[in-house]
Image 1 (spheres, helix red, strand yellow):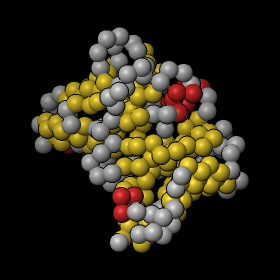
Image 2: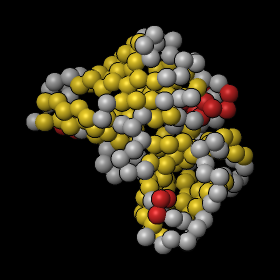
Image 3: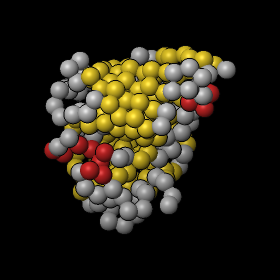
Length: 114
Length: 116
């Protein structure tokens, strides 16, 4: 079955880079996502990557995928206090009726110190 | 273009009562998804619906829970005879039509259900 694991906490200093890690178990073709959740709010889609890609960059965000190790990371450059939030890794299947079903990790709480 | 709307934002029910949670998808979106987030946990998939059709309900508890997405109006998640363990945040997401659209799910702000 599908399982997504994340480290629970990350603390960084403002201006440093943050790297949030995630591992997944499903080896089938899949999409992998990063969502951000601020306190009391819903989830905001940050970016997603298909499993045949190695890297995707979008402004301060870089996603790296190691398909062999089923390891996904999100790097935030020049981390700001506004980046403090919970970051969720998620995956979905590429086909069948399961493509709409996201499986989430338990979330990484990112705390940015001034 | 308004985002995904959910109401109520907070709902308090006593054990045994019914809870009705509503979700209005983004304009042009025909797919709706419901997720549940228990305290200090990630989101768990419950159900995926298109208009008048349930696509995947593999995450729905077998009893007391039901969902619909009628031709007109919002999607409704209904929980009958609520118990304390139903206390959670319930999130709705929507996406555009088609398989490609399912990979861009936009989430609502959630309904926080508290069962006394």
